[in-house]
Length: 77
Image (cartoon, rainbow, N blue to C red; front, side, top):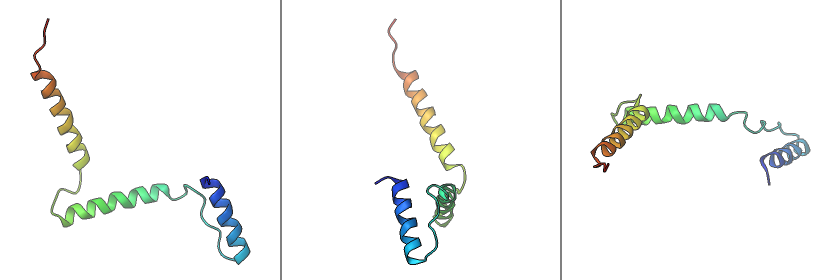
C-alpha cells in the first residue's frame, strides 16, 4: 500500500468515526528532521561533547585521511 492510499484510508476512517483528518503525507517531514538534529545536539551536550560542527569535522577528517593515503602510495611511471 502506498503512502497516498494509506492517507486516503485514514481520512475515510476519520470521517466515519467523526475524528479529525490526519495531516497530509510529508507535511511534517522538516519538523522531524529538525527535532532529530536538536536531539543529537542535546545528547552531545549531555555527554560533554561539542554540540556543533561534528559532522563537518568528521567529514573533513575522512577527506584528509583519504588524501594522505593517496599521497603515500608509490606511483609507477
